[in-house]
Length: 242
Image 1 (tube, rainbow, N blue to C red):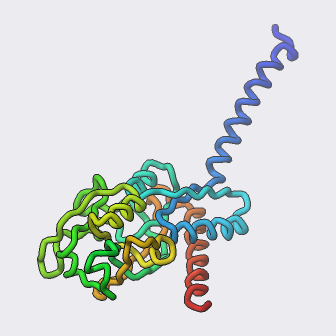
Image 2 (image 1 turned 135 degrees about the vertical axis):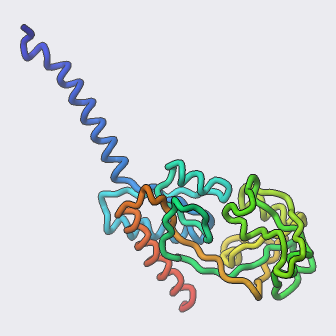
Image 3 (image 1 turned 90 degrees about the vertical axis):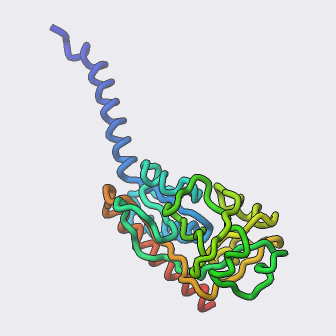
């Protein structure tokens, strides 16, 4: 019969393995992976991370930027737990949190184009310039409200080149290859001399909200969404009441 001291090395090895497994589970459960698209959403997410850390000190928050092209894929494949995106969003599998940002729509147009020299534009004006499209996106995909195929009166809108990142879109616009519907945050974060940002006079705002999967509707995700809403309200008040 084996003595206790003979069994001890095997026991220690098993115990160490169990401890590592428990630590891995704790690390996974005690971390929140938050994605964001764009500068305004990133500003909210990073400040909300600090506020959330005060309330949930045992839960680490990792903030990661996502590109428009792969944002929903990263959420649905589990790379992030919650992500701040612009609305509207398709999908019965999604939970839409509170609106954090509501910004006027603008047309990003080449600075030398006639529309780029206007003080405002309408949706009917889109018949006069090609609209950039997200690479690989199909009609109805998010965010296809930025590249309608016809004006409200039915005039066709020409499809412009495709892009994968917003910086690519700005490069294409600056080079005179088309235009893109954007939010007013561009004036704060993305100004450049070869692109003009012209407000629409006849469109609703673009809303941004935290989004997560119904299958992952955890209390911590909801708590982070509340923290993000508080931060967004504070940022908005600071911007309107300097």
